[in-house]
Length: 252
Image (cartoon, one colour):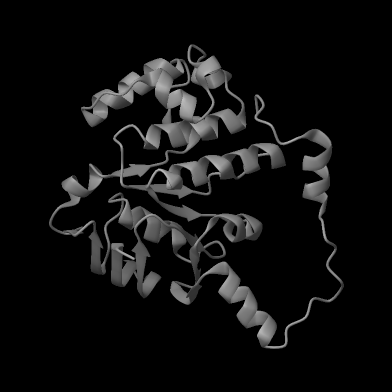
């Protein structure tokens, strides 16, 4: 597998507080790589440094063969970063917003083709503020694809979504990866990480405490003698919800 991102001995200090304490990891081309950890673990800081949005204290980051220290502007051209919902002009239509982003990237895309990828063609002339939560999240992912990036960064993309919207977004992320794009994702949902990620790094207090595939981590825990306190049912309440309401794409 080809390495597309290398992080080596990354450190980020805020005065006397050490948010990231010398972490190292590689991301492979075409995988979905998860950064997991409790609040304050350092995952969002790590993500923002990789996105060129925050300065590091020390360490080295190489993205697509380019040094973050020497070629940040070239790195920006080949990555896509998901904005939070507050990052969009609420009174503009989706087509207008896409044209705005095209101007920022100095590139051109077919707005309807882009919206088709995220199943929002029927909302093309709607204003951003008129979208539901799930639609806003899908549109935010669409904007990460405008510059045809090799890597996209998604920071907790399904927070606050209902089960249908969340699983629809999973399908979208898988489809994006299927087109050859590498995806870096943070999430607080362990089922999401287990379903989506090829490998995950678990951070705690600024350090990586485990890095492997979800299956390997689970197998290692089971082999250590771990047992759940009670028998796990073959389905959960989310499965019931999806089964009863359907998983088809809706105006979520």
